[in-house]
Image (cartoon, rainbow, N blue to C red; front, side, top):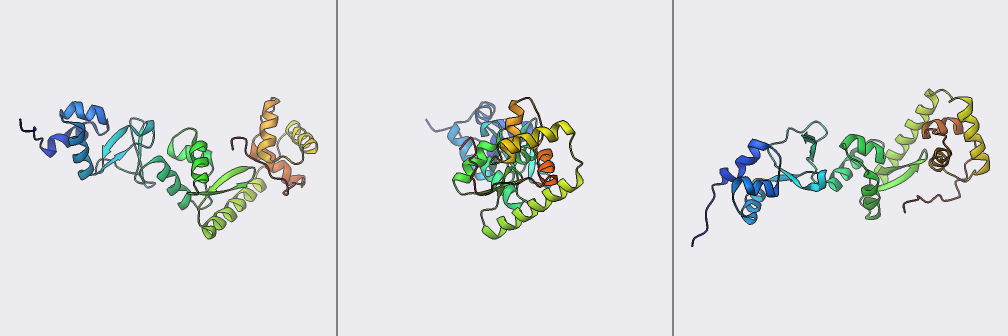
Length: 227
């Protein structure tokens, strides 16, 4: 028995009707085999979602990408750069002053970016530096990374200069913690205070540290808890 032939248009039409589909749903709608569907999609061009475990697909000519190269449909997110890993690397590389995990999460609309960024760092696909008490992910090229690092530091200094000192209670809490454990980073101080019920932002801690010119022991290496 000769195999059933499918017109290419009949295999692509479900995407133009629904915009985004899982591979299984697409096969159900067009009635073809997985191999046939995959061959047509590969030839036409497609994208997989960078969220939702990459289980959703769309055709390359369907998304109306914004200026950042991102497109979202009913909460399913796609990037011109491709996968989540590729998108993160691209955003870090082209950022002026690097990006923190939280900044990546805000831009891409995802959660727990830190896990993926640490993986990319270990694979040497991005570099990073601890600036202002948090890890900032940078370009892998030394020259670009150095420029991003300097700009980030300048941004933090301007931020500190423009922010008023926190209330007396926060100041006292930070000063006490700093005196008792001067080797800790700003990030670790914030977490220790949070465990004690004192929610003080890292920005406020930086303001206090700079205003009171608190000494920081740069020679001591602070290792991130998750590593």
